[in-house]
Image (tube, rainbow, N blue to C red):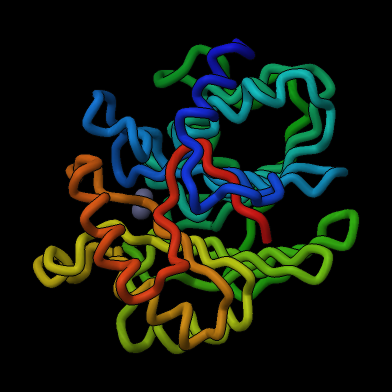
Length: 289
Ligand SMILES: [Zn+2]
Ligand SMILES: [Zn+2]
Protein backbone atom coordinates (compact mmCIF):
# COMPACT_ATOMS: atom_id res chain seq x y z
CA UNK A 1 0.00 0.00 0.00
CA UNK A 2 2.77 2.48 0.83
CA UNK A 3 4.24 2.04 -2.65
CA UNK A 4 1.00 2.68 -4.48
CA UNK A 5 0.23 5.70 -2.28
CA UNK A 6 3.60 7.28 -2.92
CA UNK A 7 3.24 6.78 -6.70
CA UNK A 8 -0.18 8.35 -6.54
CA UNK A 9 1.15 11.39 -4.65
CA UNK A 10 3.95 11.93 -7.15
CA UNK A 11 1.67 11.73 -10.16
CA UNK A 12 -0.71 14.29 -8.72
CA UNK A 13 1.83 16.88 -7.71
CA UNK A 14 1.54 20.04 -9.75
CA UNK A 15 3.57 23.23 -9.97
CA UNK A 16 1.09 25.27 -7.94
CA UNK A 17 1.71 23.17 -4.84
CA UNK A 18 5.50 22.91 -5.21
CA UNK A 19 7.32 24.10 -2.12
CA UNK A 20 4.26 24.16 0.09
CA UNK A 21 4.48 22.81 3.60
CA UNK A 22 2.29 19.74 3.84
CA UNK A 23 -0.59 20.58 6.13
CA UNK A 24 -3.96 20.74 4.32
CA UNK A 25 -4.51 17.72 2.14
CA UNK A 26 -7.15 17.19 -0.53
CA UNK A 27 -8.56 13.66 -0.71
CA UNK A 28 -11.58 14.12 -2.98
CA UNK A 29 -12.86 16.90 -5.23
CA UNK A 30 -15.72 15.36 -7.18
CA UNK A 31 -19.32 16.51 -6.69
CA UNK A 32 -22.49 14.46 -6.34
CA UNK A 33 -21.12 11.11 -7.52
CA UNK A 34 -17.72 9.39 -7.54
CA UNK A 35 -16.31 8.63 -11.00
CA UNK A 36 -13.74 6.24 -12.36
CA UNK A 37 -11.90 6.18 -15.68
CA UNK A 38 -8.93 7.87 -17.27
CA UNK A 39 -11.01 10.95 -18.16
CA UNK A 40 -11.27 11.78 -14.44
CA UNK A 41 -7.86 10.77 -13.12
CA UNK A 42 -6.21 14.18 -13.44
CA UNK A 43 -8.37 15.82 -10.77
CA UNK A 44 -9.56 12.56 -9.28
CA UNK A 45 -12.91 10.79 -9.11
CA UNK A 46 -13.42 10.62 -5.33
CA UNK A 47 -16.06 12.79 -3.68
CA UNK A 48 -15.22 15.54 -1.21
CA UNK A 49 -12.83 15.15 1.71
CA UNK A 50 -10.13 17.48 3.05
CA UNK A 51 -7.89 16.93 6.07
CA UNK A 52 -5.91 19.37 8.20
CA UNK A 53 -3.11 17.92 10.31
CA UNK A 54 -2.76 19.97 13.51
CA UNK A 55 -0.03 17.74 14.95
CA UNK A 56 -1.97 16.70 18.06
CA UNK A 57 -5.15 15.86 16.12
CA UNK A 58 -6.53 15.53 12.62
CA UNK A 59 -9.45 17.73 11.50
CA UNK A 60 -11.36 16.34 8.53
CA UNK A 61 -14.07 17.96 6.43
CA UNK A 62 -16.65 15.64 4.84
CA UNK A 63 -16.62 11.89 4.41
CA UNK A 64 -16.89 11.60 0.65
CA UNK A 65 -15.17 8.61 -0.93
CA UNK A 66 -11.82 10.44 -0.66
CA UNK A 67 -11.82 9.72 3.08
CA UNK A 68 -11.15 6.03 2.38
CA UNK A 69 -7.57 6.77 1.28
CA UNK A 70 -7.09 9.14 4.19
CA UNK A 71 -8.11 6.27 6.50
CA UNK A 72 -5.50 4.02 4.93
CA UNK A 73 -2.78 6.65 5.27
CA UNK A 74 -3.45 7.18 8.99
CA UNK A 75 -3.86 3.48 9.78
CA UNK A 76 -0.77 3.51 12.02
CA UNK A 77 -1.60 6.79 13.76
CA UNK A 78 -3.36 7.11 17.10
CA UNK A 79 -4.18 10.82 17.11
CA UNK A 80 -7.82 11.87 17.66
CA UNK A 81 -9.87 12.55 14.52
CA UNK A 82 -12.48 15.34 14.41
CA UNK A 83 -14.71 14.84 11.35
CA UNK A 84 -17.03 17.68 10.32
CA UNK A 85 -19.85 16.79 7.93
CA UNK A 86 -21.32 19.72 5.98
CA UNK A 87 -24.55 17.81 5.41
CA UNK A 88 -25.78 14.29 4.82
CA UNK A 89 -26.13 14.18 1.03
CA UNK A 90 -24.72 10.86 -0.03
CA UNK A 91 -21.60 12.22 -1.78
CA UNK A 92 -20.47 13.65 1.60
CA UNK A 93 -20.93 10.48 3.67
CA UNK A 94 -20.39 7.61 1.25
CA UNK A 95 -16.78 7.11 2.29
CA UNK A 96 -17.71 6.45 5.93
CA UNK A 97 -18.13 2.75 5.20
CA UNK A 98 -14.50 2.40 4.18
CA UNK A 99 -12.95 4.78 6.74
CA UNK A 100 -10.57 2.45 8.58
CA UNK A 101 -10.38 4.42 11.88
CA UNK A 102 -14.01 3.36 12.51
CA UNK A 103 -12.80 -0.23 12.81
CA UNK A 104 -9.80 0.54 15.03
CA UNK A 105 -10.17 -0.24 18.76
CA UNK A 106 -9.32 2.75 20.94
CA UNK A 107 -9.46 5.27 18.09
CA UNK A 108 -10.96 8.56 19.33
CA UNK A 109 -13.32 9.77 16.63
CA UNK A 110 -15.64 12.77 16.91
CA UNK A 111 -18.25 13.24 14.19
CA UNK A 112 -19.93 16.66 13.92
CA UNK A 113 -22.91 17.35 11.71
CA UNK A 114 -26.09 19.37 11.44
CA UNK A 115 -29.45 18.49 12.89
CA UNK A 116 -31.79 17.84 9.96
CA UNK A 117 -35.59 17.79 9.63
CA UNK A 118 -35.57 14.03 9.14
CA UNK A 119 -34.18 13.43 12.64
CA UNK A 120 -31.18 13.75 14.92
CA UNK A 121 -27.64 13.21 13.67
CA UNK A 122 -27.59 9.98 15.71
CA UNK A 123 -30.76 8.70 14.08
CA UNK A 124 -29.81 9.61 10.52
CA UNK A 125 -26.20 8.34 10.69
CA UNK A 126 -27.25 5.14 12.45
CA UNK A 127 -29.80 4.60 9.71
CA UNK A 128 -27.10 5.05 7.09
CA UNK A 129 -24.38 2.90 8.68
CA UNK A 130 -26.20 -0.32 9.54
CA UNK A 131 -28.92 -2.60 8.19
CA UNK A 132 -30.03 -2.80 5.46
CA UNK A 133 -27.18 -0.75 3.95
CA UNK A 134 -24.12 -2.08 5.82
CA UNK A 135 -23.43 -5.21 7.89
CA UNK A 136 -21.88 -3.44 10.90
CA UNK A 137 -24.01 -0.86 12.74
CA UNK A 138 -22.39 2.44 13.71
CA UNK A 139 -22.94 1.61 17.40
CA UNK A 140 -20.92 -1.63 17.03
CA UNK A 141 -17.84 -0.07 15.42
CA UNK A 142 -14.56 -0.63 17.31
CA UNK A 143 -13.65 3.07 17.51
CA UNK A 144 -14.60 5.28 20.42
CA UNK A 145 -17.11 7.44 18.53
CA UNK A 146 -18.79 10.59 19.84
CA UNK A 147 -21.48 12.28 17.76
CA UNK A 148 -21.92 16.04 18.07
CA UNK A 149 -25.06 17.59 16.63
CA UNK A 150 -24.35 21.20 15.74
CA UNK A 151 -26.20 24.21 14.35
CA UNK A 152 -25.45 27.32 12.34
CA UNK A 153 -23.54 30.13 14.08
CA UNK A 154 -21.90 27.90 16.62
CA UNK A 155 -18.26 27.86 17.65
CA UNK A 156 -16.78 24.48 18.52
CA UNK A 157 -13.61 24.60 20.60
CA UNK A 158 -11.23 21.71 20.05
CA UNK A 159 -8.29 20.84 22.31
CA UNK A 160 -5.07 22.63 21.36
CA UNK A 161 -6.55 26.09 20.71
CA UNK A 162 -8.33 25.17 17.52
CA UNK A 163 -11.83 26.48 16.84
CA UNK A 164 -14.39 25.66 14.18
CA UNK A 165 -17.26 28.08 13.47
CA UNK A 166 -20.37 27.28 11.48
CA UNK A 167 -22.48 29.25 9.00
CA UNK A 168 -25.63 28.16 7.16
CA UNK A 169 -24.99 27.42 3.51
CA UNK A 170 -27.47 28.03 0.68
CA UNK A 171 -28.22 24.45 -0.37
CA UNK A 172 -31.30 22.18 -0.40
CA UNK A 173 -31.84 20.89 3.17
CA UNK A 174 -29.59 21.86 6.06
CA UNK A 175 -25.95 22.39 5.14
CA UNK A 176 -23.14 24.06 7.11
CA UNK A 177 -19.96 25.82 6.07
CA UNK A 178 -17.00 25.69 8.42
CA UNK A 179 -14.32 28.19 9.38
CA UNK A 180 -11.41 26.57 11.15
CA UNK A 181 -8.90 28.69 13.05
CA UNK A 182 -5.61 27.29 14.25
CA UNK A 183 -2.40 29.06 15.28
CA UNK A 184 -3.60 32.39 13.91
CA UNK A 185 -4.57 30.99 10.51
CA UNK A 186 -8.09 30.50 9.11
CA UNK A 187 -9.48 28.10 6.54
CA UNK A 188 -13.06 28.13 5.22
CA UNK A 189 -14.62 24.93 3.89
CA UNK A 190 -17.70 25.99 1.94
CA UNK A 191 -18.92 22.96 0.08
CA UNK A 192 -22.37 22.78 -1.49
CA UNK A 193 -23.27 26.45 -1.54
CA UNK A 194 -25.11 28.54 -4.11
CA UNK A 195 -23.75 32.06 -3.78
CA UNK A 196 -26.65 34.39 -4.54
CA UNK A 197 -26.90 38.01 -3.36
CA UNK A 198 -27.97 37.10 0.17
CA UNK A 199 -25.43 34.31 0.57
CA UNK A 200 -22.68 36.64 -0.69
CA UNK A 201 -23.18 38.87 2.34
CA UNK A 202 -22.85 36.15 4.95
CA UNK A 203 -20.04 34.38 3.03
CA UNK A 204 -18.08 37.62 2.82
CA UNK A 205 -18.04 38.13 6.58
CA UNK A 206 -17.67 34.43 7.41
CA UNK A 207 -14.58 34.10 5.19
CA UNK A 208 -13.11 37.49 6.18
CA UNK A 209 -9.31 37.50 5.78
CA UNK A 210 -9.09 33.70 5.74
CA UNK A 211 -5.84 32.26 4.40
CA UNK A 212 -7.76 29.78 2.26
CA UNK A 213 -11.32 29.27 1.02
CA UNK A 214 -12.19 25.81 -0.27
CA UNK A 215 -15.00 26.68 -2.65
CA UNK A 216 -17.88 24.83 -4.29
CA UNK A 217 -17.20 25.29 -8.03
CA UNK A 218 -19.58 22.53 -9.08
CA UNK A 219 -20.77 24.14 -12.30
CA UNK A 220 -19.03 25.89 -15.15
CA UNK A 221 -20.15 29.54 -15.19
CA UNK A 222 -22.03 28.96 -18.46
CA UNK A 223 -23.95 26.02 -16.98
CA UNK A 224 -24.86 27.73 -13.73
CA UNK A 225 -27.76 29.80 -15.10
CA UNK A 226 -29.65 26.63 -15.99
CA UNK A 227 -29.28 25.24 -12.46
CA UNK A 228 -30.58 27.98 -10.17
CA UNK A 229 -31.76 26.41 -6.91
CA UNK A 230 -29.48 23.37 -7.15
CA UNK A 231 -27.31 24.78 -4.38
CA UNK A 232 -23.99 25.11 -6.18
CA UNK A 233 -21.72 27.81 -7.62
CA UNK A 234 -18.90 28.25 -10.15
CA UNK A 235 -15.30 29.49 -10.04
CA UNK A 236 -16.50 33.01 -10.93
CA UNK A 237 -18.27 33.35 -7.56
CA UNK A 238 -15.24 31.76 -5.89
CA UNK A 239 -12.86 34.45 -7.11
CA UNK A 240 -15.37 37.21 -6.31
CA UNK A 241 -15.96 35.97 -2.75
CA UNK A 242 -12.21 35.63 -2.19
CA UNK A 243 -11.70 39.25 -3.21
CA UNK A 244 -14.68 40.61 -1.28
CA UNK A 245 -13.67 38.70 1.84
CA UNK A 246 -10.02 39.80 1.40
CA UNK A 247 -9.02 36.17 1.72
CA UNK A 248 -5.52 35.12 0.62
CA UNK A 249 -6.36 32.18 -1.62
CA UNK A 250 -9.27 30.24 -3.08
CA UNK A 251 -9.24 26.58 -4.10
CA UNK A 252 -12.04 25.24 -6.27
CA UNK A 253 -13.50 21.76 -5.78
CA UNK A 254 -16.76 19.71 -5.87
CA UNK A 255 -16.58 19.57 -9.69
CA UNK A 256 -19.66 18.06 -11.29
CA UNK A 257 -19.23 14.35 -11.98
CA UNK A 258 -20.26 15.15 -15.55
CA UNK A 259 -17.09 17.17 -16.28
CA UNK A 260 -14.09 15.31 -17.59
CA UNK A 261 -10.56 16.60 -16.84
CA UNK A 262 -10.35 18.47 -20.14
CA UNK A 263 -13.42 20.52 -19.20
CA UNK A 264 -11.99 21.41 -15.77
CA UNK A 265 -8.60 22.23 -17.37
CA UNK A 266 -10.31 24.81 -19.57
CA UNK A 267 -12.11 26.31 -16.57
CA UNK A 268 -8.78 26.37 -14.70
CA UNK A 269 -7.16 28.32 -17.58
CA UNK A 270 -10.00 30.86 -17.76
CA UNK A 271 -10.01 31.35 -13.98
CA UNK A 272 -6.25 31.93 -13.87
CA UNK A 273 -6.65 34.88 -16.24
CA UNK A 274 -8.71 36.55 -13.50
CA UNK A 275 -6.77 35.28 -10.49
CA UNK A 276 -3.38 33.81 -11.27
CA UNK A 277 -3.15 32.38 -7.72
CA UNK A 278 -6.46 30.51 -7.73
CA UNK A 279 -6.17 26.78 -7.26
CA UNK A 280 -8.18 24.02 -8.90
CA UNK A 281 -7.88 21.31 -6.28
CA UNK A 282 -7.05 17.74 -7.20
CA UNK A 283 -6.70 14.54 -5.23
CA UNK A 284 -3.37 14.27 -3.45
CA UNK A 285 -2.71 18.01 -3.46
CA UNK A 286 -1.31 19.64 -0.33
CA UNK A 287 -1.77 23.31 0.47
CA UNK A 288 -0.21 25.30 3.27
CA UNK A 289 -2.09 27.94 5.24
ZN1 LIG B 1 -22.19 17.53 -2.65
ZN1 LIG C 1 -25.39 18.48 -1.27
